[in-house]
Image (cartoon, rainbow, N blue to C red; front, side, top):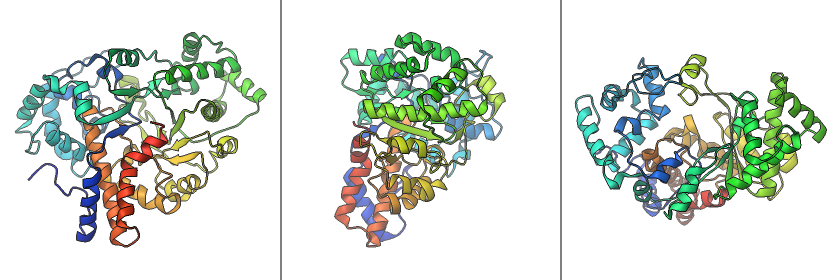
Length: 468
């Protein structure tokens, strides 16, 4: 049996499945547009061979190591680096064997879909991964990674990626993007402006980060207006490298729209470290609105990713740092929280804000009604924990009836795992075709409309939403 079935994720109902097959055939080979991700721009800049299979597929992927950790496998055993340099496993083969011993833990998960797809379609492996064939898998993958055909730029082209956006700190000098631009390579790798480190007072090193923001922008970040000018300066710098979007990872969707004098006083308290917890939260809220106002001026699309309680385990955070699998979804309010921002820019045709959520209960109750009326709002796809076949279906079922398809923005993979990008996009394409096939079979959509929509959901909407 093939690792990836021909009718993967298509409906069991024959009529719907037949339509889904036809829709998929029409869009499966469209280019990949990846407007939001976390791949490392140095990969494309230096174009060096990827490291061993474990370093490529396991060590950087929190989807994988969080599951293994939950079942008693330590992060040290999986080679995840410690902040203080304490020893961890460095033998890629041993890490791979540990992974293979526990591969059964991923049964029924989207991670299993992505991995099997990658094994089959990228590395031409046909037998399911087991502890018995772990070394054969490792050797086969390692041998291919050593070839020119598996260098980052070659894979970028093989994957048929038209454009990919990385996610970069506001303080990043973008040297890798400069190297890509100056190399003459035709691949489009764009930065995205991520200012969390300089707008969240609870971000580690915040005050020093604001000092650095002043240094790299040439603006006086000791003053409120100078601080805002520094953001404008950096946004323009990112735009000079092709950036079309900003990205904001926030605990809540809370926004504020203070008068200039009030905002200045609040900034002074935050800047000097005297703000209490409520004032720090208010500052984060104010800065979301300030970023939206700047988008009205410079045209950068704004992405808001709220609702993740990041680094939930202080022990793991202290030992391993950020992004180690301990980010947990929380309940999120949008209707009340976004109102100050929407009062300011919600009907402004120059503004485009893409909302994401980890709280599925908000789809039909809040997000779809908001995006279904405010011109500035669009809905990002099912995200993170809901980037799964069931999560994608729920998203379509709960948002389409109110927001329609055209107030959504297609799919983005949001991944650090470069080899999984084609798998993630293929899963999304299959799920959307299955959903459209069902609507056709139920006589709720004409088949020619479904073909048009399949193309839009795969390619057209994302290109327009992100100005790509």
